[in-house]
Image (tube, rainbow, N blue to C red; front, side):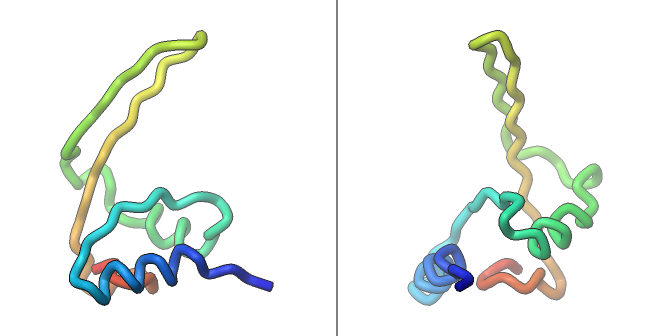
Amino acid sequence: MRCNCQRATVQAITDRGGHYILTIKNNQPNLRRRVKALPWKDIPSLAISREAGHGRRETRTLKATALAHGIGFPGAV
């Protein structure tokens, strides 16, 4: 059985006029492939955070973009 928990949650948010930010993981391979194909190098970063700890360094970058035709996910425009 396939769980569409993220889709149901996002649909509830957008039905009420809200916005969302989600992490797309490997358990959503089609969505991940469509998002990965976007021209990210041409999109400016909105925020960057860097942390070091436990023997590693992490960099997190936030980018957002509007889509002309969506990517097949509720509210992703």
